[in-house]
Amino acid sequence: MGERVRLAFVFPGQGSQYVGMGRELYEASDVARQIFSEADEVLGLPLKRLCFGGPEAELKLTEYTQPAILTVSIAALRVLEKESGLRPVWVAGHSLGEYSALVCAGALSFRDAVKVVRERGRLMQEAVPQGQGLMAVILGLEAREVRRVCEEAGGGEAVAPANFNGGGQVVIAGARSAVRRAMALAQERGARRVLDLPVSAPFHCSLMLPAAEGLRRALAEVVVRPVSIGVVTNVEAKVNMDGGRVKSLLVEQAISPVRWEESVRELERLGCELVVEVGPGKVLSGLVKRISPQLKAKNFESPRDLEKFVAD
Image 1: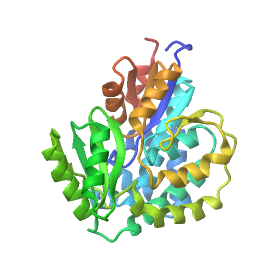
Image 2 (image 1 turned 180 degrees about the vertical axis):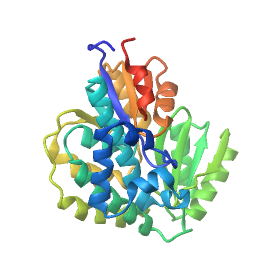
Image 3 (image 1 turned 180 degrees about the horizontal axis):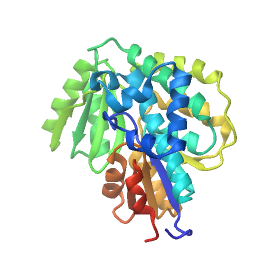
């Protein structure tokens, strides 16, 4: 691949996990094995066994999902860096993926990141009692219309957009009854499709305030190093290179919507030519193609994907 291609690495969030993820990286690469071993050591649990063999129900628990996806993403990153020599000009991540982006940018060590995201997952899980919150995806309504639907459906309960994913896809989150009302209203207003999301807590809304406070305490023990690559943040959809703002932006991220569509458009505005999704799955590369069809997008999650990065 030509050296002059201006590229961004993007990192997936919760929902991209699957049993077996990372196994090929582990079997093929010393640098990947090192990352998995570090994660097991730091967390004191057999994370690689969970990634490679499940059970799926356990891998889906937020407390384990978040460090598992981060670990696979960074293992993939280290293999891609070593084997291709590619270096991004910018990085971004979807929700949890912003922590992977910050590791790539040198701001967080992998050890600190994997420890914090496990705590983040636990805090998010515990912030709302099981069954009281809900997330749903609304397809085919403009973002401003979804905001209006949430405002009208609230009735004193929390419900708000949680992810502006692009391609006509907005995820909402909040109290179960309020989200149900918003779903019904969205259908009345002409949404193409409305469906529940199988997640264990309503992320990125005001119900996550207790988690945000716990996250602030967890991040207080972490050292943020200089940011060496521009990080397009979820909260602002703009590049941040100020290490002094990293922690506050991560805390705010827990209760704010993920502005993914705007983030991709910002990469395009900055002159990005290629977006590489690093980690499990192809969710983000699919969204990039829908948001900005002129942007090239590829994914890297196993050694077999290296052929995509041979000079083209």
